[in-house]
Image 1 (tube, rainbow, N blue to C red):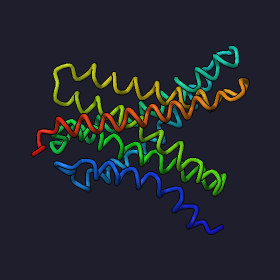
Image 2 (image 1 turned 90 degrees about the horizontal axis):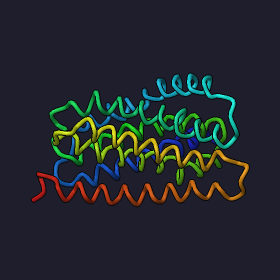
Image 3 (image 1 turned 30 degrees about the vertical axis):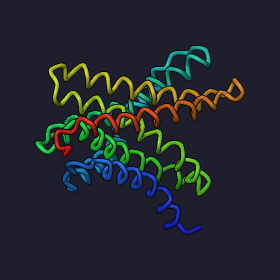
Amino acid sequence: MSGWILLAMAVAPGLAIAIFVYWKDKFESEPRNILIFSFFLGMVAILPAIYLEELGLSWVPPVSEMLRVFIIAFIVVGASEEFSKFVMLRFYAYRKKEFNEPFDGITYAVMVSMGFATLENIMYVSQYGMGNAIVRMFTAVPAHASFAVVMGYYVGLAKFRNNAVLLQLQGLLLAIILHGAYDFFLMINSIPLLAVGAFVSLLLGIRFSLKAIQLHQQISPFRM
């Protein structure tokens, strides 16, 4: 199969979700240059995430399989990836004057996350092929988006409230928990059908994401 088709399959879901969230920002759209650079920063975030994951794996203690998978899913992978994305969001888009309503937290968080997910998708699809591209289109990429919306919901609130640090940490922590739960259920192989839990986590994340988008639309100061 053509490499260009595989590349398109790897890139399409992340771009589609990014465009969907951009379209949902109905009342005051963000500048495209900041959105594109946020997407690019999401790709860059893979580098520190890989470093942190490798460092974390070297420190995982010799424990039972269940506990080892828990540590890897929540701390090594979930925390490393979500923290790397959070840093890109917090120290770039969050500081911009264009970040002027709570919904912007969701918009920019999703742009960062879709940049991360797109590059990750390219890496996986180039190695495992079309079947992997199709599976990840409906699982991993939407999962990254749901983690981002959760994080962005609280970061968006933080920008305009006094307890900013606590709200930012809450968003980061919830994103890590969702990410960790999704990965945990996929990684554990000793219990049959436990992988179903990953899809339950994904559905719950998507449901909360759609609700969070609706809530921030309702409180937009630009709403007519």
